[in-house]
Length: 345
Image (cartoon, rainbow, N blue to C red; front, side, top):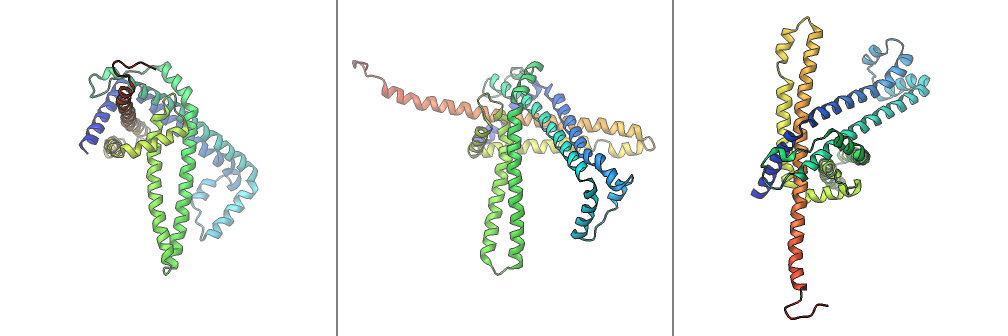
């Protein structure tokens, strides 16, 4: 327990040192968030703008907000009546949405490849052990960031698509379990079905934790030159089995810190601003936008430090494994060495 806390605290310190040395990552990742959010919003508006007005008339938005179907069958009938005349434009619009959202994922993966490339290189460059000088973690270079982003983008794209499919399968299994639980409640006398539901709930909970751990640990590992999407998944789960306590401590500290940063910057002066800028909507929107960017920058900085700490955990685990391998090989080499006076083969 004490060793795990020491390892986690050292990794957290190294994460903050890497953040301090490579601070240009923060504005780059703020730009990433803004671009991805803009593309997601644009993709969501495509079918509404392309189809909504023609299907519901010029006042389609008020009609949509006032829509209150009495039952699922009535809702299905209303939707069929609206969609039928615009089926082809709707399909084209949804295809456009898929293209825009795919572009958003690619932008996200491009920035992620560059940021993890910088953080992993910083952790490998700095000497092991306690932080001596944060400048030893300095690996930021705009050209190298772009090179890592270009080389790793498709690797992260494949990983997040695979992770999303796994999450979708988990959600389908959860829905099936909910249906089974309702059936078990309706037929409570069937104790066997209740046992199946309970066991399935435990398996789903453990699977969800494994999915979260995979999504947290695999991205830093993917930045290694020899890494692959499939191999990083195996290594991430094996690493979680060995270092679960350290990972929980590191992630827990940064989650709490991120909540404090978001709450502090998100609520900074909001009641005051409502009173101070009453009647000046444009100024109020501008000030709120600045506060939102500050909150985003704070949470991005915390996330970058957490990713640096996770990279420190991964690299440190690899260094310990390499030392253990060398120490294990040394006795075997001594046993295999010829004794004094013996002829070498």
